[in-house]
Image (cartoon, rainbow, N blue to C red):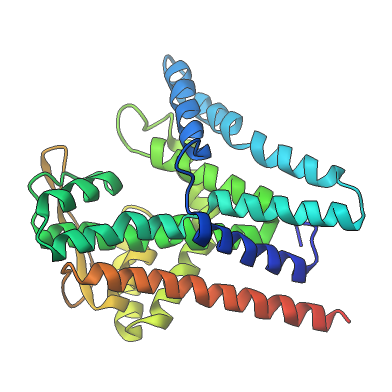
Length: 319
């Protein structure tokens, strides 16, 4: 294991990190990603100017992403090879996963939208949806808000949940920190706009690398837990047309698994954009937000069970 932990201890850390997320959720104050975002904005303002913006963006990425994982790896390596050292290492790994995981946060940001729509509080639903998506929601209908929320849930099922779990099982606390920071920079800089086309290209491409396997395993889990034939067909035929090489499989398979037609028209900065279709079936309705949440949660539980089973099998095989 790249984490340096025995498989059984890494699995326990995995369960502990997920339990901490379920218990505490994201910090209400002094959220580490908020501070990271502030630092990224300051560095981008200083470096995203003049020539050589591609290289400046790569330098900014390295300065922001590398220090925390390397510092944690150095700290873990310096711990004594004793019971107390192993206990402290396990605690640090679990805390790193907790800091990177966003399962409870997904529920806290999306389920209130479903409740607001069910109660007819359209203005509240529009405001809450605007907090989690970049499209215009000021005049969106209930079904448009439901579509936007379901799409966000499906995509973040990888970005905020399974991608973090995968990188943690692969490389422990340092790996999951690197994944989460790289994913955050992609969300901030990974745009093909005049401002970020060159400066943010490194962030976008490296996030594609980090997410390549997790995204496809997330899509697989959606297919296994939903309408399998529609999920497979949507993944195979629709994902290549989506602009993001990783969001395409995740969202197409998720939409197909739910039996929904997503994608299509959306309004950004006052301009209507026609996106490729995702999934097949009826349009999304407010009640589908809860269905999408259950699909994401079920996928997380599935991979937790598989991780524990794999750790147990590894320990048994090594005896």
